[in-house]
Length: 105
Image 1 (cartoon, rainbow, N blue to C red):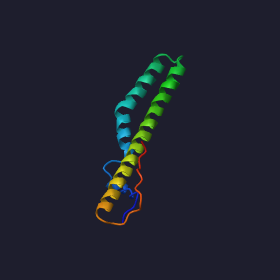
Image 2: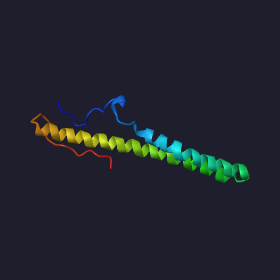
Image 3: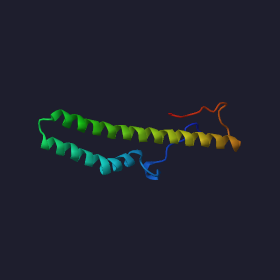
Image 4: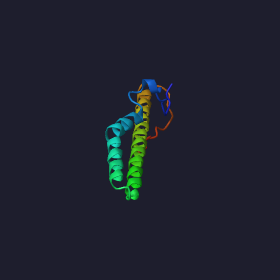
């Protein structure tokens, strides 16, 4: 039986949970950036604005990276689903009359 959107594989079967890459990158790069921001603040505690905005910007960048990777993963699932639909049609299995193009981008 063919579906327009295939069910996603359980997390254990996926190659990589989308945000793991972001977390690893944050661990390698983001923590160092936090350390530099904190170090600058400790040298010049009067510059509270730079400290607050520096931390804020890094947290926002991390969140945006997670969003980006998650949406890319969703987009790939939709593309894979479209391939499944096409394969079902080639094998003579029953599909709907139209085959919509699914993509987030």
